[in-house]
Image (cartoon, rainbow, N blue to C red; front, side, top):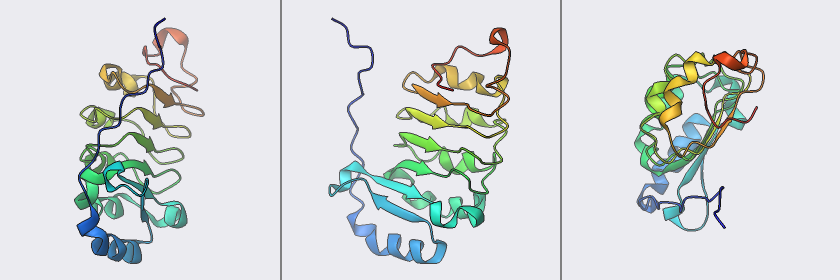
Length: 168
């Protein structure tokens, strides 16, 4: 019996313990949080912006690039980030889940996500992403969940949609 939805084993990230003071300082200055996934540093960090969503933008995100190798999930939904944020996000090499719902994203730079081999979840709901903009994501074998609710891609005619494993 073949398993269809086999989860990939999680690749551990490097130990970020020696950066805890820097992480606390970043949280105090930006308001965004880097939250450990678990008690094991090798499980990585989650970037949470819910408390500062209205003021969190591309420049704020760029300040987190120094922690990029340790971030496994980025919760950027309803922030002020735009397509420019994908430059910083492309450096989050262990990123597994990316929330961009309700942002100003158009999708014109989605190809910058293709090197993120661990990315399995992408939420683009409530953005201006079109089905054409999704084309570069087709070659990401581990990207299994793409959410497109309330986007131009969701309402595109079936014959123009890319062949992605998406959930709408």
